[in-house]
Each structure stands twice: as C-alpha cells, then as structure tokens.
Image (cartoon, rainbow, N blue to C red):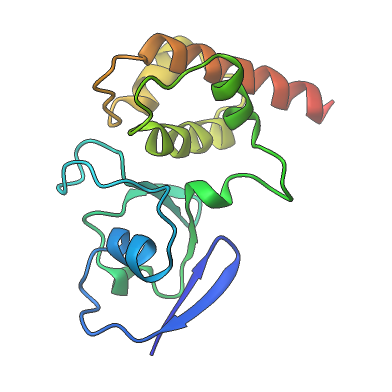
Length: 157
C-alpha cells in the first residue's frame, strides 16, 4: 500500500512499481491530469509540481521519493474555489496559446513568488528558465507574474 499526500488530501493505493514516475501516478492513478508529460527527461518543465513547496519535475521523480512529502499539483494551486493570483493573471492577460506547458509555468512562477514577492524581470527569467514554451509566450508570462505579484502585495496590505 502506497500513501501520498496530494493537494492536502491523503491517497492510499496499490502500486506495483514504486519507481514509476510520479507524473504517471498523478495522472493515471489519481486522475489529476493538469500536470503534463512533455519530454520525459525533466528538461521542459511541463510536468512541474511542488514537493514540500519546491518545484520538481514529476516525469523523472520516482513515486517512492514522494512518499511522506506534501505534493501540490496545478489542481491544488487554487484555494477554496478561488483562483491563485497567478492563475487569475494568466486568464486576464490571455497568457496561454496552446496551453500545454502552462501548468508547469504556473507552478514554477508560484514558487518564485513564494520566495521573491516583488521579482524583477531578471528574477523571473532566472526562475522560469527551466520551463519551455513552444509557442513563445514568455513576455506574457513575465507580465502575468508581475501582475500577480502586485495583486498579492495589495492583498497582503
């Protein structure tokens, strides 16, 4: 029996291969399909989730390494039915084009804002460098991160 904490819920299930990548357990076993498969080598960032608050590539992380850790997927980024300020900025600024990489982009951006509440363009570029967007929406992503940072700052006052 395998026990995982995902999006503040506990899941128990049988898994024959505990070395199976976390990505496939999230998608196939738990039905959390927001996290995407991109390259399968942890280089594109489409599969980014948080493990104890830090971004990890779920396509290359064995499920056994996530046992006892707090996992957050894109589905867990919003709270109580309210979009995270990043998700809201993504919608308002029409950030996605095809949208495939965007869950990973959002998860990396959420980590950035949790550690750098008022990021510079350079901070954003450095934090997002591991997330590839084939459609090239990088300028809109940067603008949305700035907007979300402003929103979070105003909510905190």
